[in-house]
Image 1 (cartoon, chains in turn yellow, red):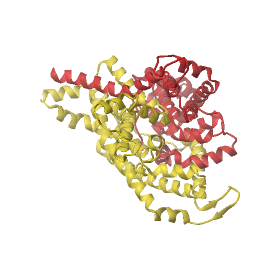
Image 2 (cartoon, rainbow over the protein chains, first blue to last red; image 1 turned 90 degrees about the vertical axis):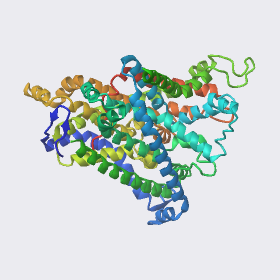
Image 3 (spheres, each protein chain N blue to C red; image 1 turned 45 degrees about the horizontal axis):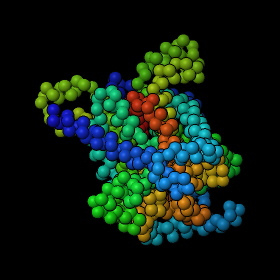
Image 4 (cartoon, each protein chain N blue to C red; image 1 turned 90 degrees about the horizontal axis):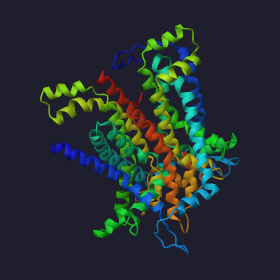
Amino acid sequence: MPARHRGNGAVIKQHRNTAWWLVFPAVSLLFLVGLVPLIAVINYSFFDIFTLDSRFWVGAEWYAALVGAPEFYEALLRSLLFTTLVLVIQFPLGVAIALLIPRNTFAKGMMLIILALPLVVPWNMIPGIWLGFVNADYGLLGQIFKLVGWNFDYKFRAFHTWILIIAMDTWHWVGLVSILAHSSLSIIPETYYLAAKIDGARTWAVFRYIQLPKLYGVLTMALILRVMDSMMIYTEAFGINAGGPDDATSFLSLELGEDIAAFDYGPAAARSVLYLLIVLLSAWFLQLLSRKQDRRSL
Amino acid sequence: MIWNGCKSLLVIGLAVVMVVPLAQSVLLSFMSTLPRDDMVVGTFTLLNYRNLFNDANLVGSLWTSLTYVVLNILICLAAGLPAAYAISRFSFVGDRHFLLMLLVFRITPPVVLSLPVFLLFAKLNLLNNPIGIALVHCLFNVPVTIWILENFISSVPKEFDETAFLDGYSTPVFFIKYLLPIIAPGIAVAAFFCFIFSWVEVVLARILTSTGGKPISMAIESLLGFQTDVGLVMAVTILSLLPGVLLIFFVRNHISKGFQLRI
């Protein structure tokens, strides 16, 4: 691993293989709760399983059925669209909010608390909160819709379901993007801004040449978290309309959830492996992206 | 000047938008939402909270949740601190693979692993047990802990540990007596993120407690039914937020300090 550069100068790391002892507890823990189930799931995906004791080798049959069905591609497209919308909305918004966070200690603290609030809500309660919010009879937003005469019908109109899920997800996660972005903005030394002011730089130039470069690293992190979590959104989307109307919001993981709920071990396992490959591929791609950023910032 | 005014307005507007959906839930939690003999629907009342605290199941599930979250934080810190130190200070064979592995496990969707995890933990006899959930949540929390702590440890000058080792301290003593106090804010931030990711997770928590020992998030689901008492559900929701809100309050000045990915 190349030496990493930090704000306070170059750090050259000592090569020492005994450091493995320090990593050992974490590795064994992750093997137990991560690797062992992973291997099991790959194993199941090649069997037709009635009970765990009576099972038949079916080879790649489940995979063939999965890849051959149009439902898979439809769900994949829906998930990709959802992830794209999430990124397009939440990143500009999150960065904008981070730039707006006041510098005054008290106001800043309050703002961070408010932004972090949705993050501590258990995921299965988030749909409940939003369904209450848009309820036409007693919901604050639902009553406003009624007042202005907008017939908001998330149960039967796909477009409205999408709006509701996107709004809910943005409310839920934009705080994470802002907090992470704020963390890298807050380490920019005051002198940089001063220098920019002396040069007569405009707000946009300050953002483009001082703030944005600092954001790259942390935004890659946020990007990875948001891409993965939105691709595999399950609990929240299911809670809104269970994938409906007419499967219009049936994302990848909702289909997997159905297989698992029906105790279809074999097909569920094959689906899991396929999704995992998608996730790994994205992770690998994002890692390449992040290494490139690292080199640029050196 | 005008820009500053607009900015303040924007900030206030934003805060309102973030808080309003929750405010609705708070309001509902203080309302009678089912037709009752002695109360009109919509009356302001503390009844929901009284019902909540009289329900042994709900109170018990709150304790279950707190138990596994705290256990999870302790396990993650114990396993994560030495690993973070190793990554921060040394290079070793396979270190990049280790970092890639952390990323992979952090982003593996829980729903993908839920089935085999269930079978594995049934074999280990850890179903319906807070220890089981605490262990399985390490899947995503150990990577996060390592990333955060590595960041904090790397900002401690190397000379600091060299002095301690020259004084003849063994590695465990060094970690506990020297490193821990100096990176205390990092520990708080790591604990905070472990807390929120573990507290809000439901897929694995659900499958591991399908027959008993349910956490608070699952206890709520059992309240939903033919005639749901929305007020009670909202009261439980609000109560389940409080520990998280308290934690945010304590770490608010540190969460903005460090959380960067290393791959």
